[in-house]
Length: 333
Image (cartoon, rainbow, N blue to C red; front, side, top):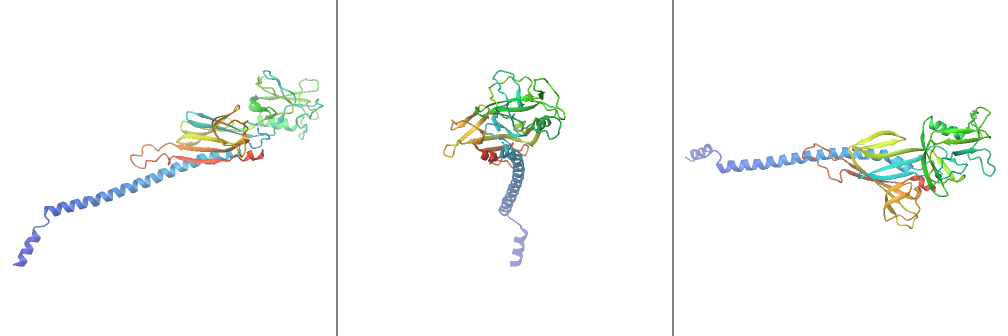
């Protein structure tokens, strides 16, 4: 009789409360499993996006960093405009210049508001050197230094820069050719055994903004690299040629840290041009020259990844990378 009662209880199965409890427990376990699954999915999704963004940002620094460190290379004076910095539409634009060839020295004075020639050779000078080497190693009548400039120009019009190192005043001009004259001031063509007495750089009749004195004025040809963000792409414009470097970049933020001497308070400046520096905190009151740039602080911000659903959202910190660069050539002055 006892056995029959046990059999009856077994045939009755689970009670309603037991069934609900089982379903509830199963739901909890399933919910925990799904929650863990989605957390893992979000973690791996964010990790992948973070890696992609970091790679993009590091590529930007690998591109821009060497130029920032090498600005002012092959430059013989601190008045050269080795860097230009500005902010447009909330993002920085920076131009880095390095000397391309040995600079030339001006032989004859230039007056402001004139179209005076840029004389770089004059054998008639008796109180000062002829300004450039008159060596003609190729025996083609051209002084070697002028020939190097001519080869660099390669038949084109290029930008040159002139600066009077005694006043720190300078300007860019278009250099488009060479004028060669004999001792009487008549145009001649250099050839083997026949060298010019006077060489002028031609400038498309450039009107000069400043006075430039012979002997203290240098003329430069240079390599120029500009970095800026255009249409969410970090671009390099090198000597006029445009290269797209890194896509999905939102902002380039550059600050020049300028310090006049070791005891002065450094200034954080956002603008550098031919007139000096501005937008500085604290204000910079000294005479600016590019060798006073202690460092360039660069921050690159990537665009947030789009169309990724509700997973793997990145924070502002995830999208930004900062690095500091030291212009090494400043230590030469």
